[in-house]
Image 1 (cartoon, rainbow, N blue to C red):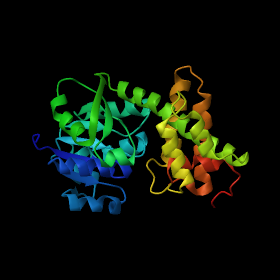
Image 2: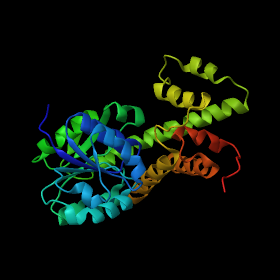
Image 3: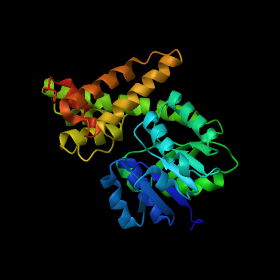
Image 4: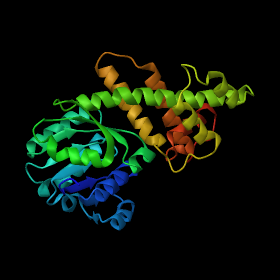
Amino acid sequence: MTDQLTVSVLGTGIMGAAMARNLARAGHLVRAWNRTRAKAEPLAADGAHIADTPAEAVQGADVVLTMLYDGPATLDVMRQAAPALRRGAAWVQSTTAGIEALTRLAAFADEHGLVFYDAPVLGTRQPAEAGQLTVLAAGPAEGRGVVEPVFDAVGARTMWTGEDAGSATRLKLVANSWVLAATAATGEVLALSQALDVDPQNFFDLIAGGPLDMGYLKVKAGLVLDNKLSPPQFAVATAAKDARLIVEAGRENGVRLDVAAATAERMERAATQGHGDEDMAAAYFASFDEKPVD
């Protein structure tokens, strides 16, 4: 049992709720806030205090953990919390915010005397609920003892990328570029199989045990084939946002990422067709001319 911490969790969507629940189960005092309060209220059964405002949530917090939609949303919420932030508190920033936004968030932390940790996570709903995420962490070596119990509660592994805030986010974007490309390719394999009257299982059998075989392919394909796209492990709309952040990072650093750009377009098209809240495997539907939802 680690020393008990007071942890404020701002954002209790798919990932944030699971992280808050595991923090409470590890014995920490959790103060949770979500823009839509109803999404946070189930955490009360796990012992979390549900706050009405970000400022209320961060009162007395040793660690503030943000898991929100994007960088601008995170900065907006932290500005709302600002009057109650304690100088010297640690800020674990786990939102996939992108490189440019992260710079602004780090500046906000410096302005308010917060110890800033860039800490995105790898994993989706299932590993988040099981406390099996991989935490990519960057931040000052001094003070890591405060945030490591938080990482241990939500993840199975912490990979420190250095003290440079931003190095963890850069690695997350690289990792997500591979995950999103594999997801898009899975959808296209299934769509082409359908168009050519090929049983997808024949393709899986063809590559089984070889270098092209991939457990992730079978998991995501299974969600489509078994019509289990809800509740999402990782939603189409969020995947589209992350794909755009990857394209932007490449462009700003002189690299053209055609696959990431095409993946972003597929995800956005699927969202327009009405699949935005389904698992990102639903990008499969972007291969067909479905009528967009009004």
